[in-house]
Image (cartoon, rainbow, N blue to C red; front, side, top):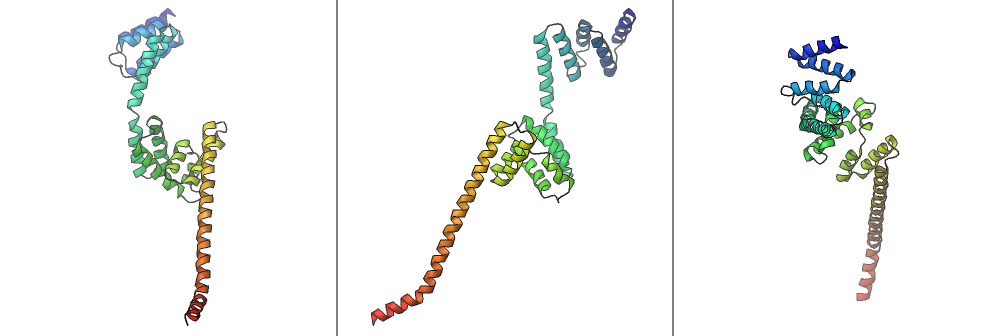
Length: 235
């Protein structure tokens, strides 16, 4: 153990590369030498201050020795770094869409929307991609891929565009994948009710139009007879 300790200490003293540093840190972790992990991270914090790997290792070490506040600080900073890079997903999605790499584009725009669900540009891009996928021929890989993209977000995009039947179809796929999703199930029931209401309204409108057309037809047939009667009375 002492030999291993001396070797690792010598490596740390000789300004190791990042990769070598993380190999040493992993070795120290496996041996349970958490205080030495903390010291090593502190020693190289200036050159690795924005390295998420360093922060997560340091957070783990702080947690092991009971410094939960410091562990939280390192993890919070790690999350901030990750979130600052989220817009990269949107940029990649734009490029993939222009290259007609629709599956990759959807994956990245969905990751972006997980952080920014109300971004109108991202939602428009997603709808553009999904429009292509929906129009893909039956049996096309893109068409099959669409079934895996069924999410409440996509369903609501259809709803906002008054495509109620498409929204219902997507929510039905969501429920198949996750039968315990009570929120989506309630939304599905409401949308189905709206579809039925809309269909009934359309049916009533059609009946009204048909009645009006029938009345016009009857009047047109009787009009010559009415004129004859009026002409006879005027004599």
